Image (cartoon, rainbow, N blue to C red; front, side, top):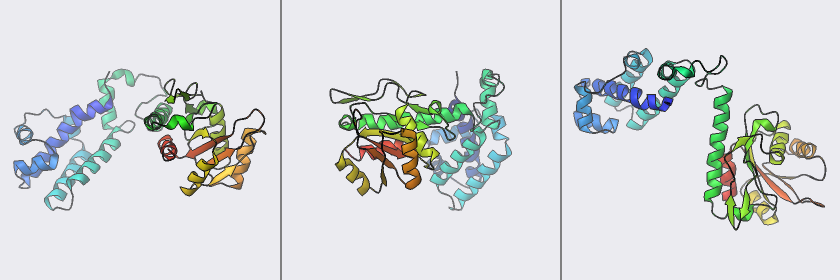
Length: 299
């Protein structure tokens, strides 16, 4: 098993560094100056200069790679480009070459032929593929959960029914398009306990609130529920959040849609409970990390 990142490390970076080192040496850079620019040792520069580092001819002969290397070498020689800008431009180039069907994608598929044969509608390097979209959501959700787990006292904000941090794909239509924590997050002896990794289709209640808000025009893609407390609402308002109250004794979907239609900028929804219904606060945001950071700021 080999990831495309390994192709970048093993094939792309040695080739690009070798090409850029050669271009800089032709422009009068000393071996030390080349080493400083590339962030490598002088001995490594020497290896590049003597051809002791294997380069990938397909990468080296790609017109876009050659053009970008020459552009960066000229910029470094004239001081119009900094080493940080070199890093940024090469990062952008990597993303371009890793896109569906492009150079790094083809090299990856050559290295792992099974990828190309994995179904006629699946392409792992298609940035718009369902697999990549879903994995981006899950990865973002994992990062958000780490923020909450590392917050220490997050357990104090978990309501009796438990919390859940959820996130959805861009064109979410139902709860199967929303990922969350299976079984919810509970306070176990003062410690926030996440019972398992995030999955799609495992959150009904918080997912319903998020989907209803989006259906009414909210651009939120993530949400979390925490315990109700007027002081928490005051703190959220002071941090610039727009608050809106809804009635959970009625149909949740309809209630949330109604308040978002009335207050489209709302990022905090809350209900004060009723008979057999625990009062809850819902924090909405563009992604799980920002939602988690909002919650952490309350601790």
